[in-house]
Amino acid sequence: MNDSKPPNKSASSLPPSNPVTRRAHRRQVLRQIAAPFVLVILLLAGAIYILSQSELASVERWAEISSMLLIAVFVLVLLIPLALVGALIFITARLIQQLPPYARQTQLAIERVKSQVRSGADISVQPMMQIQSFLAMLDMLIGRRK
Image (tube, rainbow, N blue to C red; front, top):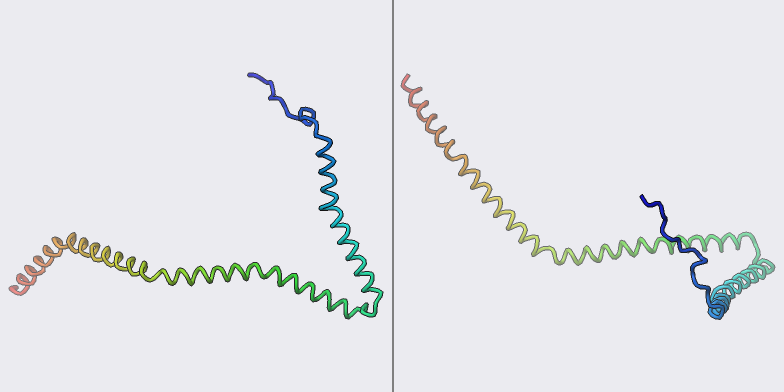
């Protein structure tokens, strides 16, 4: 057995990163992710501060606003299942339009199989039925003579 392990690629085995592209990437992250995020948070904090200092800062008003926001979240979450149900209804309607010819073909095929099975069963039972009817006729004739 050979207990030697395959060489492990670690961070030291990777080539060093390019400092120019690293600086460009940091600037891009700052410009496209961090700055807009901080700006939106500052705008929301300012809007909340202004609204809390105005006459609109009654408890009832904030309760109404928070209720509307909660309802809006639920409505948005429930739109997904509603869209799925609508899509299923649409697909079902299309299938119902396409189904009758194929259903008739299936019905005819099942009727053909049924008639063939019935005739096969009749053919297999016919010799036994003839023997039993012959014996019944003999029994009737012999029974009448006694």
